[in-house]
Amino acid sequence: MDRAALSQLSKDDLISLLLAQEARIGELERRLGLNSSNSAKPPSSDGLKKPPRVSSLREPSRKKSGGQKGHPGETLRRTETPDATIDHYPQICATCGAALTTAMATDHVARQVFDLPEPRPLIVTEHRAHSCRCAACGTETRAGFPEGVAAPAQYGKRIGAFVLYLLHYQLLPEKRLAELMADLFGVSLVTATIARVSQDCAQRFQGFADAVRDRVAAAPVKHMDETGFRIGGKTQWLHIASTVLLTFYRVSPKRGSLLTHVTGIVVHDHWKPYYTLKGVLHALCNAHHLRELKALVEIEKEDWARKMQRLLCRACHATNLAYEQGVALKPSLIALIERCYDTIIADGLAFHEAQPALLRAAGKGKARGRKPRRVGHNLLLRLSVRKPDVLRFLSNPDVPFTNNVAERDGRMMKLRQKISGGFRSEQGARDFAVIRSLLSTARKQGWNILQTLTSQPNDLITKLSLA
Image (cartoon, rainbow, N blue to C red):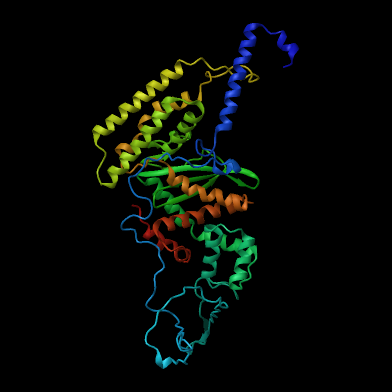
């Protein structure tokens, strides 16, 4: 709008325009103040302006920094059975220069060097299926080959397991993986072979992934999250459902395609479609709340947010101390925390209701729906309506303070996308989800990854520990 157009406006119109512009400027300033420490933005969005980590949202733990008592440590220890021993003897006396021999040795000091063996050529095992002619009827019968021996020349299951480990656990791109196998082991692989190994593994462990899915859905407490995935140049969704010991990944074109037959308690980040799940209780991620409260403290300077931030941190700390001692939080303490929670909510709502109403930004068209509210007001209403879900961790020791279990399980998926980009096909993305379900679950169960990849799926299903 130019100067001539402004001069035609009335005083009331100018005031309305000024207030609308002020609201718009405030919104833009708030966006500039958001980063990964006070919002849901990923750390990668901070770029080179990543804020320094000068404070933590956690309460101090009274413990000294460093390893705690009883920690086994990871120091390299000597072995009593070295693979090779090399003796070193002095040639001449250090005082008079006389010649010395091995027969003059009196004692020794030993030092051990741990190293990798020299790479060896591949071990080739030839399977021969012999034919035998029956002496009674003359029929010739040929022996069968072992399971998995299907081609005149092929790579064994250990090479396949190593390829899958590097491709889907360490997330090496296919071309770099082929280079690594050639450089370290002299194995010449093409990307088509690597892709076929991945497809065969996903097909073999599909039943295992289905079993993990069913166990997660039936678990007393499960964590859920979702993240965008690029497949064939389009955005699709990777859904995460996990527990402390199980992980299930699922690819879907729709973000709202939720896991079915879910029971128990679902921990999530307040994405509204989760509240459409029937027959479940909900627990909200308080790490998200703490980040939102931090933004309100740093940008809007709202005092109620500082009090709520402190209350949630202290409630988490008190809960952790109680669980470390193997006891539940005292009902009187839970009641005190809830009263403080209600008081802070009431003070915050009174503060926002006393603020002047927000005007819609200019150029937004005809006003529709509810009147705009400030960010802090929206958060207060959520904390008020969902109070039982926010504070469920106080009374149920199985419910954690955050949804970090699912967020950690999703973090490596974003790293894979960062390294290699998206997937060319939906089938490739589904194969990746199946194999990552296997690998993540194996790591949580404490299984050896390479042995897991060469095991039978049914044997692994019977070994699954649920608690």
